[in-house]
Image (tube, rainbow, N blue to C red; front, side, top):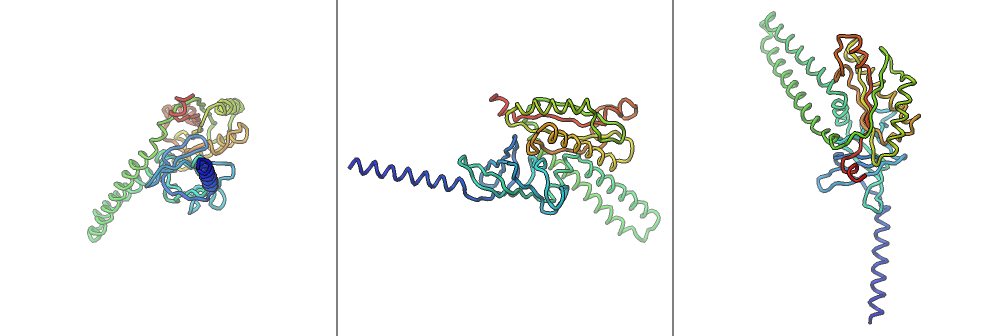
Length: 304
């Protein structure tokens, strides 16, 4: 009798192990919003649960409309920031996590996320445009009374757009507050000449040292944000700050050995977020910069 019980228990354990093994290699899909990110993992929050996903060198990340990406629809895993809606296809591992094979993001949501990470600049530009439209419409009322009703409707429509943009700013800003859950373990500021995105040898050395220090941190991510001074128009400054951020990311990956999956949300702030007054030459020199931070989740940092 005892022998039969033992045999049955062994059989049950074998079946359980086999089931677990099968589940570990099972293809799966999860859709939701990125709740947090740390190192090579991020947590997707769905209506039912929170699922941990793992990034690898083979993970393919794309958006469904091709915004802000590389060739075709591929984008960098740096775009995977808290608050972004994603669909993750992969296989489960023995810890119940999903090893991500393909990550698809919502194109419109990515655009909004990039706007917030870019210092709300596109949204601010849209608000300014709508305000200008209101002024133009009001001028039309004064000059052409026959168009009063039409212009009033346009004013109302533009005011609604302004309200929607302001609401979007508040909503999306709140989504990225998860980044405050990180401790800064190292940081560097890279300075640039006027109109340039070339990194000086001195700053290259500083970035290489930062990358080396980051490699010793558990579950680290690197945040890169570019800035410009107020010389030139806002659109040009946004593009210039983006080029500077990309130059720093390229150095960190190619020269510093930082895996791209450890770099999060390279931002282009343009002339916004200045560190010094733009009225002076010295101040403008301070504002032509890229800020780089090595961040570690406070929960992980507390365990080190």
